Image 1 (cartoon, rainbow, N blue to C red):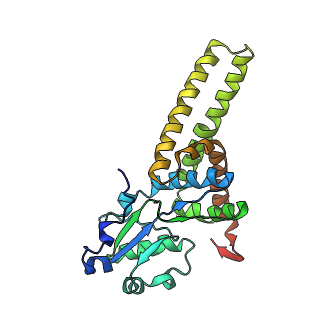
Image 2 (image 1 turned 90 degrees about the vertical axis):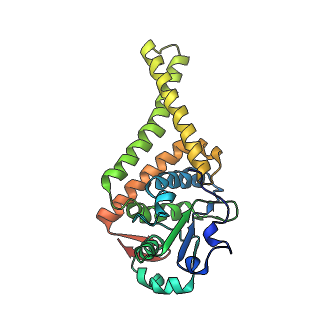
Image 3 (image 1 turned 180 degrees about the vertical axis):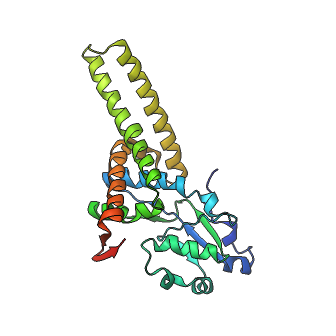
Amino acid sequence: MPIPNTCPAALQPSSSVGRASRLIYSRSPKQRTPTWWEKAVIPQGYVRLARLYRFAEVSDPRLATAAANGQYILIRRLTYERVGGHEAVRSAVLEDVELAYLGKASGRRLLFLSGSDWVRTRMYRGFFEMCTGWTKNLYLLYGGKMALMLAHLAEAWLLDLLVPFAYLCLCFLAALGQASPAALVAAGGCLLIVIGRQRSYKQLLGSLGFEPALANYVMPGAALFGLLLLSSIRAHRWTGSVDWKGRKYPL
């Protein structure tokens, strides 16, 4: 389903004041990714999380699914105060998502949309900061579902890392004249998987406001995202805390 990049009708002047006053509107801003590691990891994370928090489901008042992006939230003061504001989620690591849950559970309308050209942010300023941020958040964003996290890890490493690497190795053997017919067939199969994954990834990137060219970073992105998944599992299941901007947060 296409995601509109224009101002939603619920926020336009023609909407009723009562309806707008109960609205919690969050946008997942278009992300600036000037470095290679941002180009690799940020789109990878957004694409995978979009499968967990589908915009249509989050915005559906009949479903309990809730999400928000702390980089961009619009909410009227009265609604903010009635759901408890950030005081009510002060102990939460994912305070933006928890605020969205509180709002939706209290009967407020939650509208969550993808990125756009008129709002852009940069999520992290350094590689270590990015690693710490994803480590802090991923386990919670996955709801602590180990099976789901390991499934995404296997998908990333097998289909987006191992298969392309196997294809390159088979091509190298073919160039040396040492590839058997079975190896050539395997190379063809790997190539089809790589092409299919690239095409699908480009489409998903475009729907989330990313440049399709960022699909060229899928291999390092899959490798790093898998490591961050493992790091987040370790922090939440064994370490029990994470340092973030000079503070230690219990997990």
